[in-house]
Image (cartoon, rainbow, N blue to C red; front, top):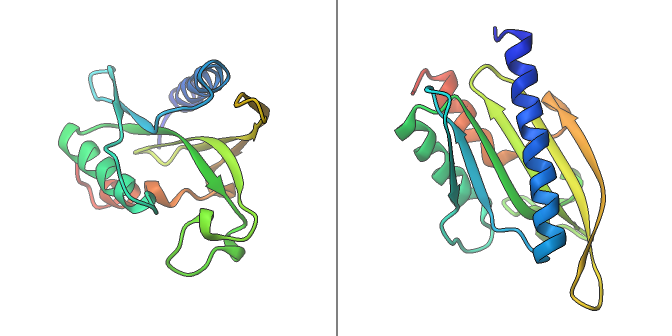
Length: 162
């Protein structure tokens, strides 16, 4: 079990990354898909995801688990523009972007090896002039919002891999 203070620090770190990601969206109108590894020595490693074909979730999942296994990271946070949809509307074997009426969102999703999870989703509204307006960020903890892209990382930690 992770001490509550350590879990709180992790959640605050994720919230700070969300604020930075929101600023990037406003300034640039886009955000590269990237991830952050929290390493055992306390350092943070930031990486852009390798380019991937749609649906990108499987490719991102494999890249994340490889990075976590290679580095022994204790936590991972990923930030990306994404589609969001009610899980019941997503066709089998497809992504949220294949569901009817998906929402365009900025997602910041994180998990640590102790099971602390947080997802922050921000609605994105593209204006005709190319700018992006942001909706309110909604925060979800633990089992309120499942991000499949993190499943392989969760499995590797349950199996005791670095």
